[in-house]
Image 1 (tube, rainbow, N blue to C red):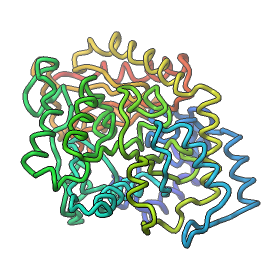
Image 2: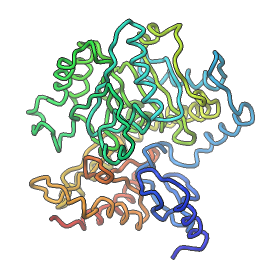
Image 3: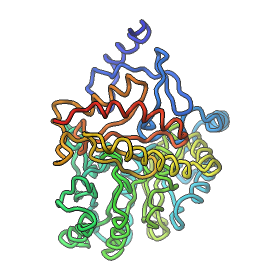
Image 4: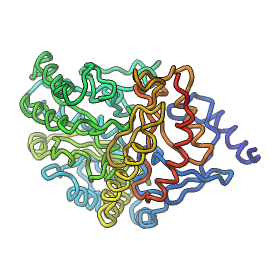
Length: 452
């Protein structure tokens, strides 16, 4: 039974606050009040393991005092400083210098934002701006089905998953966007099986560029690992093939590292797994470990030289000094504490257990992912890969049962997302003991699913 304070808070919330991807005028019944380590606590004192880093953004967990202190100190010095009209500030310059040490070589030019959607929109504008500066009319952007890029205009149009849920009543489609099938091997659009498929999903990109005309295609944009789509990692050949295709047709390659960046996959940036250098990288979430809203777009020297001397757009809070120091301190911690290495180690540990203990369960089609971006495929029939009837709300029930047991996990398969997958993506500071504690809660819930 909830206390009076919690009931009053929830009642006011239902009557006044809009929630992301949740019916307006409703809430899930949890009011977060405190957090520490990989845990958050509600107003009733109940503690939850954060098995999803909330929105895959709290990479360093809660209570990183160094970041909190850096924020407080900068607030006392410089509450705000713009990047308009040629002005700059110490904090953003130092942040850019630190970021330049971490991004792939040759990508140390930056435009700053306040989050992932802004970073995506900025990257798309930058790609088109670059071609315009070169005297070209290239403007079309190719993205993937099963992808998620954000909720602002261009980002939402590029998004390829949950279209009905995100767009209903918004009429948000913008011209100049094309979507092609993703590398979702378990449910391949081409009805192929890896590796006999020859990575047709990658080869199809070349076909589309040919049919649309290379002179019209400004960029191909994708997440290195599909996030909202269910933590879907590509076959190892996928990204090298895509890079080769983009280079052949003179198309910019934009890597959306908003979720995958800053150690999430076991590398500082996910594209390092394949030795690929994109032309543009978008960042947010982990750049400050979500302690403050912040984002960035990194781009190549070729783009820099083409647009140099021209005016490009920015936002009121681009380069906010307080957010910048949070990012700088977070980046110091990622490097000093070998956070990416821990994500790789704990991801391997968790995946081995998912395959061993969850894989044989009657309603599990498989488990896969990269680093601490892991997903469990839920099916009603293992032999045919048939998913559960959406009307049964199986995925939401899994999430609800886990919450009752003190574990928050994200699930796809609700709100129009393309897959039925349970996501395990905890803060990158997690220990093997905490991995076991989380999976010990989750296992009987999934084991209790009945094939239909």
